[in-house]
Image (cartoon, rainbow, N blue to C red; front, side):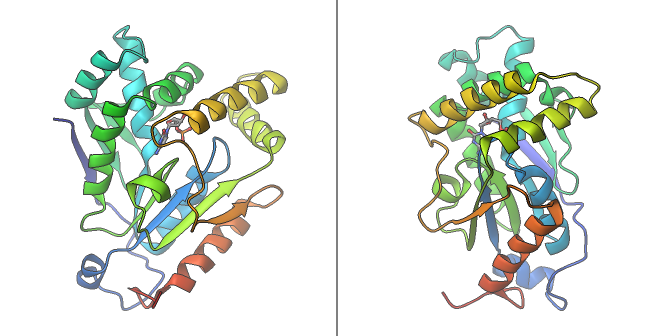
Length: 253
Ligand code: DC
Protein backbone atom coordinates (compact mmCIF):
# COMPACT_ATOMS: atom_id res chain seq x y z
CA UNK A 1 0.00 0.00 0.00
CA UNK A 2 1.15 3.49 -0.71
CA UNK A 3 2.58 5.00 2.43
CA UNK A 4 2.51 8.70 2.96
CA UNK A 5 3.21 10.78 5.96
CA UNK A 6 3.08 14.46 6.39
CA UNK A 7 4.78 16.55 8.95
CA UNK A 8 2.62 18.82 10.97
CA UNK A 9 5.05 21.70 11.21
CA UNK A 10 2.26 24.16 10.69
CA UNK A 11 2.55 27.83 11.49
CA UNK A 12 0.72 28.49 14.70
CA UNK A 13 -0.53 31.88 13.56
CA UNK A 14 -4.23 31.54 12.94
CA UNK A 15 -6.75 33.66 11.15
CA UNK A 16 -9.20 33.20 13.97
CA UNK A 17 -7.56 33.85 17.34
CA UNK A 18 -8.96 31.75 20.14
CA UNK A 19 -9.55 28.81 17.86
CA UNK A 20 -8.02 25.78 19.53
CA UNK A 21 -6.51 22.63 18.02
CA UNK A 22 -9.39 20.69 19.54
CA UNK A 23 -12.01 22.82 17.85
CA UNK A 24 -10.09 22.63 14.59
CA UNK A 25 -10.09 18.86 14.52
CA UNK A 26 -13.72 18.68 15.64
CA UNK A 27 -14.70 20.83 12.70
CA UNK A 28 -12.01 20.68 10.11
CA UNK A 29 -12.17 23.12 7.26
CA UNK A 30 -11.29 22.16 3.71
CA UNK A 31 -10.22 24.89 1.33
CA UNK A 32 -10.07 23.37 -2.16
CA UNK A 33 -8.11 25.28 -4.80
CA UNK A 34 -8.19 23.94 -8.34
CA UNK A 35 -7.06 25.33 -11.64
CA UNK A 36 -4.82 24.84 -14.66
CA UNK A 37 -1.02 25.00 -14.69
CA UNK A 38 0.62 28.34 -13.85
CA UNK A 39 -2.64 29.84 -12.60
CA UNK A 40 -0.83 30.72 -9.36
CA UNK A 41 -2.26 27.93 -7.21
CA UNK A 42 0.88 26.75 -5.42
CA UNK A 43 2.24 30.13 -4.39
CA UNK A 44 -1.06 31.40 -3.14
CA UNK A 45 -2.21 28.13 -1.52
CA UNK A 46 1.02 28.00 0.51
CA UNK A 47 0.55 31.57 1.72
CA UNK A 48 -3.13 31.12 2.53
CA UNK A 49 -2.41 27.91 4.47
CA UNK A 50 0.29 29.69 6.50
CA UNK A 51 -2.06 32.56 7.32
CA UNK A 52 -4.85 30.20 8.38
CA UNK A 53 -2.59 27.74 10.22
CA UNK A 54 -3.96 24.92 8.05
CA UNK A 55 -1.98 22.11 6.44
CA UNK A 56 -0.78 22.89 2.93
CA UNK A 57 -1.19 19.99 0.53
CA UNK A 58 0.04 20.22 -3.03
CA UNK A 59 -1.48 17.22 -4.77
CA UNK A 60 0.24 17.99 -8.08
CA UNK A 61 3.57 17.34 -6.34
CA UNK A 62 2.35 13.83 -5.50
CA UNK A 63 1.56 13.05 -9.16
CA UNK A 64 4.90 14.57 -10.11
CA UNK A 65 6.74 12.35 -7.63
CA UNK A 66 5.09 9.29 -9.19
CA UNK A 67 6.10 10.53 -12.64
CA UNK A 68 9.69 11.14 -11.56
CA UNK A 69 9.95 7.61 -10.23
CA UNK A 70 8.56 6.19 -13.49
CA UNK A 71 11.07 8.18 -15.55
CA UNK A 72 13.96 7.01 -13.38
CA UNK A 73 12.87 3.38 -13.72
CA UNK A 74 12.26 3.73 -17.45
CA UNK A 75 8.61 2.87 -16.94
CA UNK A 76 6.33 4.48 -19.55
CA UNK A 77 4.08 6.94 -17.67
CA UNK A 78 1.14 5.47 -19.60
CA UNK A 79 1.91 1.86 -18.50
CA UNK A 80 -1.17 1.30 -16.33
CA UNK A 81 -0.07 -1.96 -14.79
CA UNK A 82 3.43 -0.86 -13.76
CA UNK A 83 2.20 2.53 -12.63
CA UNK A 84 -0.38 0.92 -10.39
CA UNK A 85 2.37 -1.19 -8.80
CA UNK A 86 4.55 1.87 -8.28
CA UNK A 87 1.65 3.86 -6.80
CA UNK A 88 1.11 1.10 -4.29
CA UNK A 89 4.79 0.97 -3.31
CA UNK A 90 5.75 4.64 -3.28
CA UNK A 91 6.73 6.21 -0.01
CA UNK A 92 6.01 9.88 -0.24
CA UNK A 93 6.16 12.47 2.50
CA UNK A 94 4.88 16.00 2.30
CA UNK A 95 5.92 18.83 4.56
CA UNK A 96 2.69 20.64 5.26
CA UNK A 97 4.47 23.86 6.14
CA UNK A 98 6.76 24.47 3.18
CA UNK A 99 5.55 21.95 0.59
CA UNK A 100 8.83 19.97 0.49
CA UNK A 101 8.31 16.44 -0.76
CA UNK A 102 10.31 13.25 -0.46
CA UNK A 103 10.08 10.09 -2.54
CA UNK A 104 11.36 6.90 -0.96
CA UNK A 105 13.40 8.95 1.49
CA UNK A 106 14.94 11.36 -1.05
CA UNK A 107 14.05 15.05 -1.17
CA UNK A 108 12.71 15.50 -4.70
CA UNK A 109 11.25 18.99 -4.30
CA UNK A 110 13.51 20.40 -7.05
CA UNK A 111 13.68 17.29 -9.25
CA UNK A 112 9.91 17.13 -9.75
CA UNK A 113 9.91 20.60 -11.31
CA UNK A 114 11.78 19.38 -14.41
CA UNK A 115 9.80 19.86 -17.66
CA UNK A 116 10.06 16.15 -18.50
CA UNK A 117 8.40 15.42 -15.18
CA UNK A 118 5.63 17.94 -15.92
CA UNK A 119 4.75 16.12 -19.13
CA UNK A 120 4.99 12.67 -17.52
CA UNK A 121 2.91 13.77 -14.50
CA UNK A 122 0.08 14.79 -16.78
CA UNK A 123 0.12 11.26 -18.28
CA UNK A 124 0.54 9.43 -14.96
CA UNK A 125 -2.37 11.36 -13.47
CA UNK A 126 -4.73 10.00 -16.13
CA UNK A 127 -4.32 6.45 -14.80
CA UNK A 128 -7.30 5.51 -12.61
CA UNK A 129 -5.33 3.25 -10.21
CA UNK A 130 -2.77 5.99 -9.57
CA UNK A 131 -5.54 8.45 -8.86
CA UNK A 132 -7.31 6.03 -6.54
CA UNK A 133 -4.12 5.48 -4.50
CA UNK A 134 -3.30 9.18 -4.22
CA UNK A 135 -6.85 10.37 -3.60
CA UNK A 136 -7.17 7.89 -0.73
CA UNK A 137 -4.11 9.43 0.86
CA UNK A 138 -5.27 12.98 0.20
CA UNK A 139 -8.53 12.28 1.98
CA UNK A 140 -6.66 10.70 4.88
CA UNK A 141 -4.48 13.77 5.29
CA UNK A 142 -7.53 15.94 5.89
CA UNK A 143 -9.28 13.51 8.20
CA UNK A 144 -8.27 15.31 11.36
CA UNK A 145 -6.85 18.55 10.03
CA UNK A 146 -8.01 21.69 8.35
CA UNK A 147 -6.26 21.92 5.00
CA UNK A 148 -5.66 24.06 1.99
CA UNK A 149 -5.44 21.48 -0.76
CA UNK A 150 -4.62 22.39 -4.33
CA UNK A 151 -4.86 20.40 -7.54
CA UNK A 152 -7.23 19.73 -10.41
CA UNK A 153 -10.05 17.67 -8.86
CA UNK A 154 -10.10 18.69 -5.20
CA UNK A 155 -13.44 20.50 -5.24
CA UNK A 156 -15.00 18.16 -7.80
CA UNK A 157 -13.87 14.70 -6.65
CA UNK A 158 -11.56 14.56 -3.64
CA UNK A 159 -13.67 16.83 -1.40
CA UNK A 160 -16.99 17.58 -3.10
CA UNK A 161 -18.22 18.84 0.31
CA UNK A 162 -15.31 21.23 0.90
CA UNK A 163 -16.50 24.36 2.72
CA UNK A 164 -14.53 26.64 0.40
CA UNK A 165 -13.96 25.90 -3.28
CA UNK A 166 -11.94 28.14 -5.51
CA UNK A 167 -11.12 27.76 -9.16
CA UNK A 168 -8.08 29.84 -10.07
CA UNK A 169 -7.54 30.74 -13.69
CA UNK A 170 -5.71 33.30 -15.78
CA UNK A 171 -5.47 34.09 -19.48
CA UNK A 172 -3.29 31.54 -21.33
CA UNK A 173 -0.74 34.18 -22.35
CA UNK A 174 -0.41 35.35 -18.74
CA UNK A 175 0.07 31.77 -17.53
CA UNK A 176 2.71 31.18 -20.21
CA UNK A 177 4.55 34.35 -19.15
CA UNK A 178 4.50 33.21 -15.50
CA UNK A 179 5.81 29.76 -16.39
CA UNK A 180 8.54 31.32 -18.58
CA UNK A 181 9.54 33.62 -15.70
CA UNK A 182 9.84 30.60 -13.39
CA UNK A 183 12.13 28.90 -15.89
CA UNK A 184 14.22 32.07 -16.29
CA UNK A 185 14.67 32.17 -12.52
CA UNK A 186 16.24 28.74 -12.84
CA UNK A 187 18.77 30.14 -15.33
CA UNK A 188 17.00 28.79 -18.43
CA UNK A 189 16.17 30.78 -21.58
CA UNK A 190 12.73 29.58 -22.60
CA UNK A 191 11.01 30.48 -25.84
CA UNK A 192 7.64 31.95 -24.81
CA UNK A 193 5.75 30.38 -27.71
CA UNK A 194 7.15 26.92 -26.88
CA UNK A 195 6.23 27.36 -23.21
CA UNK A 196 2.71 28.45 -24.20
CA UNK A 197 2.29 25.45 -26.51
CA UNK A 198 3.49 22.96 -23.87
CA UNK A 199 1.22 24.46 -21.23
CA UNK A 200 -1.72 24.30 -23.61
CA UNK A 201 -1.00 20.64 -24.47
CA UNK A 202 -0.81 19.66 -20.82
CA UNK A 203 -3.99 21.58 -19.96
CA UNK A 204 -5.85 19.91 -22.81
CA UNK A 205 -4.77 16.50 -21.54
CA UNK A 206 -5.78 17.38 -17.95
CA UNK A 207 -9.14 18.79 -19.06
CA UNK A 208 -10.12 16.00 -21.42
CA UNK A 209 -9.07 12.80 -19.65
CA UNK A 210 -11.89 10.50 -18.63
CA UNK A 211 -10.86 10.23 -14.95
CA UNK A 212 -11.39 13.31 -12.78
CA UNK A 213 -10.65 15.88 -15.48
CA UNK A 214 -9.69 19.42 -14.57
CA UNK A 215 -13.00 21.17 -14.13
CA UNK A 216 -14.57 23.94 -12.12
CA UNK A 217 -16.99 22.45 -9.57
CA UNK A 218 -20.44 24.01 -10.00
CA UNK A 219 -20.24 25.57 -6.53
CA UNK A 220 -16.64 26.80 -6.84
CA UNK A 221 -15.85 30.51 -7.04
CA UNK A 222 -13.88 31.47 -10.12
CA UNK A 223 -10.96 33.79 -9.39
CA UNK A 224 -9.28 35.19 -12.49
CA UNK A 225 -5.73 36.03 -11.42
CA UNK A 226 -4.81 37.80 -14.67
CA UNK A 227 -3.26 41.11 -13.70
CA UNK A 228 -3.55 40.47 -9.95
CA UNK A 229 -0.59 40.36 -7.58
CA UNK A 230 -0.07 37.37 -5.29
CA UNK A 231 -1.12 39.54 -2.35
CA UNK A 232 -4.35 40.48 -4.10
CA UNK A 233 -5.21 36.86 -4.90
CA UNK A 234 -4.38 35.87 -1.32
CA UNK A 235 -6.71 38.57 0.00
CA UNK A 236 -9.55 37.45 -2.27
CA UNK A 237 -9.21 33.86 -1.05
CA UNK A 238 -8.96 34.82 2.63
CA UNK A 239 -12.09 36.91 2.21
CA UNK A 240 -13.91 33.91 0.73
CA UNK A 241 -12.75 31.71 3.61
CA UNK A 242 -13.86 34.29 6.18
CA UNK A 243 -17.25 34.48 4.50
CA UNK A 244 -17.76 30.73 4.93
CA UNK A 245 -16.07 30.23 8.26
CA UNK A 246 -16.75 32.18 11.36
CA UNK A 247 -14.57 32.01 14.47
CA UNK A 248 -13.06 28.71 13.30
CA UNK A 249 -16.42 27.10 12.85
CA UNK A 250 -18.31 26.59 9.67
CA UNK A 251 -20.80 29.37 9.05
CA UNK A 252 -24.42 28.45 8.45
CA UNK A 253 -24.75 27.38 4.87
O1 DC B 1 -0.20 21.22 -10.36
P1 DC B 1 0.91 20.56 -11.13
O2 DC B 1 1.16 21.23 -12.45
O3 DC B 1 2.16 20.40 -10.33
O4 DC B 1 0.37 19.07 -11.45
C1 DC B 1 1.12 18.15 -12.18
C2 DC B 1 0.18 17.27 -12.99
O5 DC B 1 -0.58 16.45 -12.10
C3 DC B 1 -0.81 18.03 -13.87
O6 DC B 1 -0.54 17.80 -15.23
C4 DC B 1 -2.16 17.49 -13.53
C5 DC B 1 -1.94 16.44 -12.49
N1 DC B 1 -2.78 16.62 -11.31
C6 DC B 1 -3.98 15.96 -11.29
O7 DC B 1 -4.34 15.29 -12.25
N2 DC B 1 -4.76 16.05 -10.19
C7 DC B 1 -4.41 16.79 -9.15
N3 DC B 1 -5.19 16.85 -8.09
C8 DC B 1 -3.19 17.50 -9.18
C9 DC B 1 -2.40 17.41 -10.29
